[in-house]
Length: 71
Image 1 (cartoon, rainbow, N blue to C red):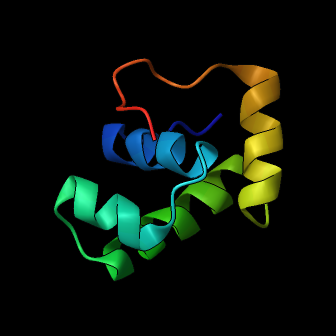
Image 2 (image 1 turned 120 degrees about the horizontal axis):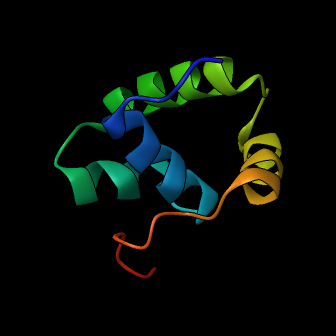
């Protein structure tokens, strides 16, 4: 099984909470394009096609990390 890097896990958590790439980029101090690159890798590693499938898969496997700020 492939695991996500710490940065990918953080971005995954934000995506699951419904944040967009621009919002995530501002929060993490990276460009939205960098966020999109991470999202593509996350989708491939998780075996999903889009954010909706990612949310479904994550919610059935494990909760989001508690260290993230509320939206």
